[in-house]
Amino acid sequence: MNLFDLAGRTALITGASKGIGFALAQALGAAGARVVLNARSADALQAAVQSLRTQGISADAAAFDVTDADAVDAGVAAI
Image (cartoon, rainbow, N blue to C red; front, side, top):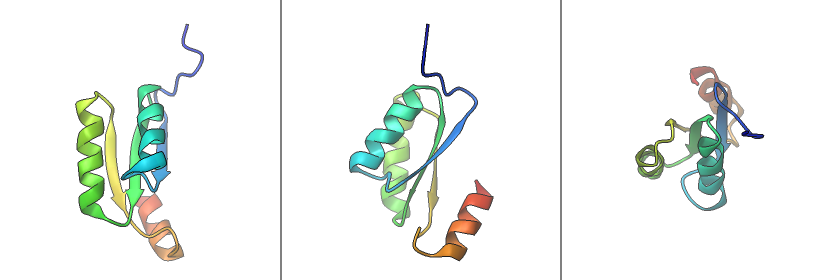
């Protein structure tokens, strides 16, 4: 019995190109969520997404600056 099943859910993780954010993306993805990684650097995000995909995790990237409200609105709408 899986007590933490996120199948069918989407998780947006900020600061996810490395460190704690990347670890959270791995854990949420392993629990079945589609993860959308966010950071400002598109190149770093693509590397992180590729790493997760090789682990069988459904992952996508959304590069935008979370300190810019208009960018956040547009980024979340695109997801």
